[in-house]
Each structure stands twice: as structure tokens, then as C-alpha cells.
Amino acid sequence: MKKLLLGVFASIAFIACTSEEGFELAINAPYAGDSPVKLTIEGDQVLYEGNLSNGEITIRVEDFVNQYAMIQIAELGQPAVYYHGGEDVSLTFDTINGFTFEAGVFNDSANSLTAKSEMFNQTMMVLENKFKEASQVGDTVTISAIRSEAMNLLSSQAKMNLEFAKKNDILGAAILMGSNSTDFTYEDFKDVAAQVSEQYFESPDYIKLTDKIVTMEKSSVGAVFTDFSQATPDGDTISVLSVDGKYVLVDFWASWCGPCRAANPALVELYSNNNSRGFNIVGVSLDNKAERWIEGIAEDGLPWPQMSDLGGWQNEISTFYGIQFIPQNLLIDDNGVIVGKNMEPADLADFLAANL
Image (cartoon, rainbow, N blue to C red; front, side, top):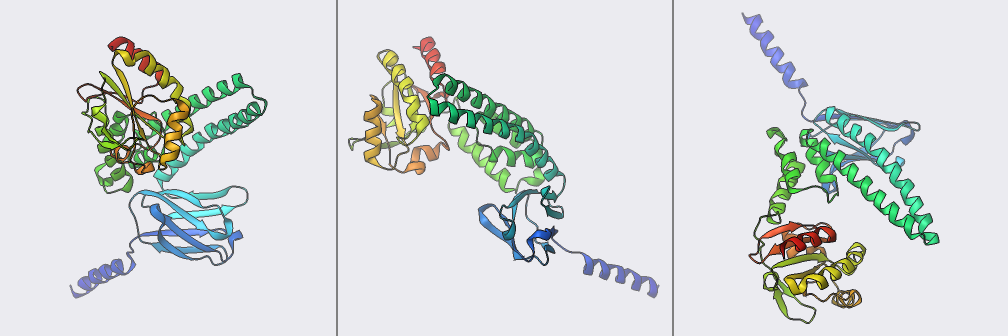
């Protein structure tokens, strides 16, 4: 009996001595010599910093919740990025294949999506070269066709990313939050959040996703617009809901924003054709220089009310509504209810024709 107990205690002691927390990180990069190496996550938080020995190192690192991580090997220049799912990580480098990771199923899935995206990236590079050539000779017809093709390409890539995000758990949340597309709707974000397993609710990407949904809800169609007051170019103060109109377009723009300035002529035409019938616009500028803001209004001949706190991207109104790119717009009715969002001029013209 004594021998049996000793055996049990010995087994427990062995388990206690050999059980290690965290994950193993192994790097094999012969060409890197004794290069400094660093493992970081979002916000440049350093999880490990040291040096390779003859291009190799094997260490244990404190684990962290599921998210993208970056390994920087100074001698090799370009960093290596992978998706951390909690498994041990093996990174190799050679001059033929570059960086190769073994980091678990989530990273394998992320790599698969990256490979599919490469086709889009290569096509976009071809379009960029054609665009430069057409611009040099002033071929406006070709320029317009290339722009249209590029927009369709971006839309197709966004659709592929969204389909992936809706069926890949926490990795889907990371992909969605890392995509910069105007095609994603409030419902899309909710769908991706709904398929994330509860065990990943502490992941930074899930937290960012749910925060994004809360912000998007404020500007969703059917929500009541929360009013704000800001300064006009003349130094007075107006509020959004004080602007008269059966329908008022809240136009987020800035004088330094090329796409915004390019969209202004169409808005001026819409305003001219529909203002007398009850349509109005209020511009919310993300400028931070009053002189440039005022010049932009004059240069584009914008006749509608304008407001700004000159806070740039930290404008109080745009921050509240989660505006991360411009131009964007919200259409509100005379009850302050949001009835449209990011409407293109043609769609807005159709809406006004049917409702004024």
C-alpha cells in the first residue's frame, strides 16, 4: 500500500514538474544569424524580446487570447504575421518559400483566405498600372472603366471576406474587423457576432465587434437621430435637427477628402432639384482648419448649412456615429428618424422622387 501511494505521489509530482503554461514558440531562420527577435500583438504590446542563436530559438511564451500576432526578426526586415489560436507555433524561413507558419487550424484557415485574396491583389495591381497609363494620356473613358472595374473587384473581395467571416468563429470576427469595406451592413456585423462561440467572448476582436455593433445601431435605419450642435463657418451655432426639411441629408465630408469633393457636384444638383420640395442637406465637416473648410465650401458652391467642431476625425458627431471613412451620409425625416444610410446620388434621387 505504501509503495502504491508513493507511486501515485510520484506521478503527481512528475505531472506538476513537467506541466508548463503558455505555448512553445520555435523559430528556424538560418539566414538571420543572431538577429534580435520580437513577438508583439495589437497596440505594439511586446510578449517576447530576445535574440536568435544561429538563426534558431525555442522558448515558452505566456499565452494570450485569440488574435493576430507579429514576429519581427530584425535581420530579415519584413515581419511575419499569423493568427494565434493557442497552439504551439513554429516559424521557418528560407529564401524560396519565405515565412512558413505552423500555428493551428485557425491560422491555416486565415492562410487559405489570404491565398484567395492574392488573386484580387494581383488584379488590382494590373488595374493600377493601367490607370496610371490612362491618366498620363488623359484617357477619361478608360479611367472611368478602370474605376468601375476596381470598385467591382473590391466589392467581390468584400463579399468573399464576409462569407468567410460568417462561418469561421472568432477568426471571422478578426477578418471582419480587419476589412475596410463600406459594403458591410449592420445586419452583417450582427450575423458574424452571433456565430462566435462563447469561449471567445474575451477576445479583443469579439469585444471590438460588439462595440462596433452598439455604435452602428445608433445610425441604423429606423433609429432616432441623436441631435448635436456645432459651429457654422460664420461662427454661429446650429443643431442638425434645426435644419428645415421633410428629408435632411446629414453629409459627413471634409475639404481634404478627394472622394467627398468629387461627390459634391451630384449633391448640388440634387439640392437644386429638390430643395423647394422639402429636401435639405447639412454638412458635417471633419476638417481641422477653418480656412480650408470655408474655401472648400466656396470652391464647390455648397448652398446648404454647414457645421463642424474642427476636430478632424475626432469630430463629436462623427465619433458618436462611428464614422471611419468619408463621404458617408444619413437621411433623416422630419420626425428625426433615420430612413436611409450611405445613399448614392442616384438612389437618393429615386427616393426623393417617390417620397416628396
